Length: 113
Length: 112
Image (cartoon, rainbow over all chains, first blue to last red; front, side):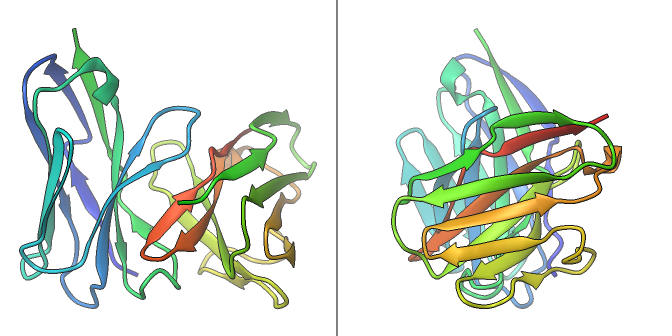
């Protein structure tokens, strides 16, 4: 099982500011890195699946990068809005999804108006 | 994508009792997964359920405590047996579609 670490644990950001947080994982036995956005009482929403070293993906104001050699991924949010408030989870996948995912504890993001 | 529903959405139970959580998917899938998130902890895989075979449990989880049924390709249940306060968690089911896992909204369980 891969150990996944996320930092910071929680983050308060002013509306309009940009922010980023980190996901670290062991670089051995790596297949894919997943980012999710999870609001209370809702299903975790899949944001990105990244597999290649140097991968960069973007969805609106949210983007992510991946470094598989050093074992980290960054998630960036540009121009934070109150609706961005959520817990952001990253997870590694060692077997193409067949073995389930290994999650970090998440970064709890609060956007202050 | 996948549309997944779970029942119940939340429950409060007494210790020593059992609760069965249902997971329904909008179309057929081979594998379904059950996770839990204890307070302050990460989402952790409990077991993988394939239709027509016994579920595969992760280290630290046993069938007697978390029996799983998978009667068809769109439905699964997870039972939390002989509950204790340590079982208070959010329980989620998920399915794999292409390269993404999609999750249900979760069942928030409190054991008193």
